Length: 350
Image (cartoon, rainbow, N blue to C red):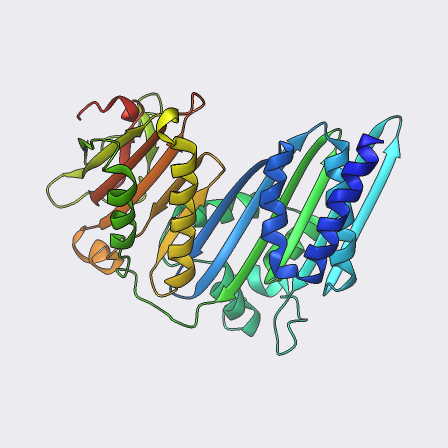
């Protein structure tokens, strides 16, 4: 009975989301309340305003049922959709591939992948449309996610992901569920790559954190040409070149907030502020990756100079809500590549 009530409750949510497909993201992010692992990437790029979701869970058939209810309703108004379902000897196999929005004047045209993936077809409209929604002019975490999906997906999932402007793919096989959803629109603002102003978030950091946590100064250095040692590296973006000084440097502040000081509430406020920043600043080029406990926000201020004289400057904000309830907030100004040591929470100077 409890399972039936759960499915009916989520079905009501699915009905509401189906009526407003732009709210697909809200439904996905609420799946975290049911124990699903949800990671989201957003990018404001010169030509794109995009969002990607990745949802995984295990051994939760009611959750899979609720997703199927949602996708069945979304499929009714889709440009194109496919579904496969098999139940044999207690093993469930469920697959959905749905294109919610395509291209053309009616948003009903799916790109021809043969034209998109063939370099000789680079002059076609399909290739041009693909570049405006799926590729990026500088390497960033969002592009890395795109490449992972590109290698992972096949068949109808690949057709939907690369051919549509808005799509959702879902697989449930032997108790493991994986959902990928994408929403992309052309950025009419067409900002510049060095237009990333993080000062509104700095003001929020001062208002929220300064009264309860004294910032600790941090300084990280990474020598030019030094390999990234995974055993000592927490986060790196080694696709950026070091500065002319022969090393990359990151200087900033580390805040530590305990659970009793309201760490969980503060994390949510910071995450909401980071998302709002992307919502209201389409001309700023930046990337936001987040889960319910961790987010990173960064931007590349000057990729033109990076290509000319190896200078790369960027702002960086990261928040991590630890399992013990402690919140760590790291705010950096970066010259060169991003490099953060594994023990960054201990505030060791490098």
